[in-house]
Image 1 (tube, rainbow, N blue to C red):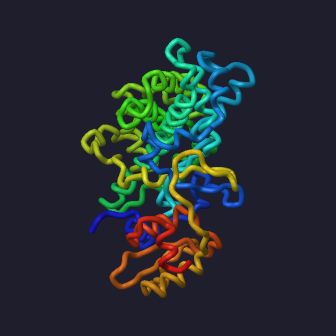
Image 2: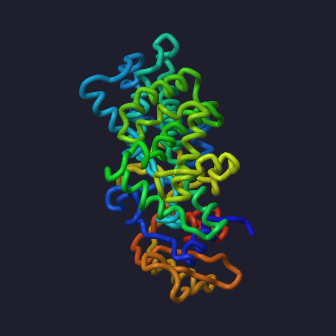
Image 3: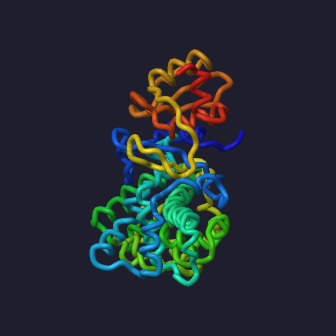
Length: 385
């Protein structure tokens, strides 16, 4: 049987390790003010794709900023706000279940793209191709945020693997005893927020690899790395330590320290070197590229390439349809109050958020995939929701 997020969520629920979103160290989208659209990864990478025609209203801003160098005064203050802890977040499986994934504020991408343009060389950029250039700058801005959040999934993957081996929970203890206190200032951010420093460093280094490097021209790649080198020291405590881990040797050493932190839920790592002998522990368990969401203001259409929307449905309506079409029933005494576990003969187990008037597209996408539908709309039409 293939490994799936749905199966893992069911396993976490049985072990009473599935926590509600309210316990997550990161935020979630506000359904009253924001809409979610799932990113079409293939179209995002396509340098000749149709999304190039979407107008980000950046051409004049790029024209003004090309070659301007680092921002100063009020512009510098604003630029410092466009960073991963504000513009994007990862929703861990442990806290969000099938609602996991990476979420990126689309409004941030426009401003980060314009910031990157400051490091472009005026002699190497054709002013006549600004419309194409704006797309590449937005793509580069997207990569800087996506790669940072993708690293968080790798660390959760590490915690899951360690738990599966010996049955000892790792993820929640680490966040309760190390990460959260560091964010609150109770312990040193340089130690407790090592994950954020490494996520920044990971973003910087992975830009050199395909498919990211192949998706932008050389000038944009160079400008993006220069922009990150400028921004990192200005990031919040912990995050700004990325500059310590930009070399391969330093990054690997930092990663082993982090692995020991997660494994022991302490900052006094004593057996760091043992992780050199388990080099694949932080490989991503799932293809997170299919779970990236752009967050836009309610009523605003996304400019990034995304999949079509669907009509809203509630937990109650979905449960009724699943019972009618597949025979799903609740598992008595299973799951926490925020989630409902479902079982049906010959069908994969499902875990659904309880009491939702409008289930998020992230949740519906996961259920559609578990039931082998190509998309949310097709599933809802079949179920009559």
